[in-house]
Image 1 (cartoon, helix red, strand yellow):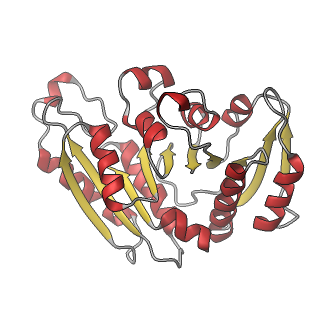
Image 2 (image 1 turned 90 degrees about the horizontal axis):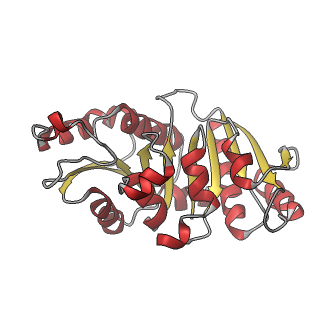
Length: 269
């Protein structure tokens, strides 16, 4: 429960009226459902008066000139029913460059988690074009949920955790186990042994036993971490972040997995 309180104390959701952002809010709603710890949600829409770009959204040129600020507020209000009625929700519409404004709102609300929908930008274009999701993965001071797929009442039916025995992966195990236990989800941990430093499988097993019990499956994969984790097909993949930011994080496993995975990815800091 302490892990839930730390992760879901204040959740900021980027909302832009797209199906992807709606799915992100819906998945947050499922993750919060049944949570006993105090938490709150802030629905943030960013209206860029210079480029007329909403959070994480690249609209056609014909639509940018006429997309009204009030429509963003209506989009945020429209996803409120996707969240548990007991959770306090604030709706915020701010003006400015989407990435920096989202980071400002994360700091202002002391966010513990930010959730955005994946628009399936490839990783390199996301970096070059200033994709909001990419910027948040690099710079957010809190955990990041990159949501994929549509609103699913069973989400997350299966939870996988990428682990290597580090302190960061232990936090990911704690987060994944807490979510799985509360939601009744199947849980497994995956250790990738190919490439780089050898993972500490014994430490992973110990952390998994403590968080979820000795019967929780631990799978060994011979591929490099990004390849092994990106091929997984759970509803939610949880990975730990090494805490790198900016240019140093461009090659991090968590950032690459978040872009390349086929499922929703929760990056725990």
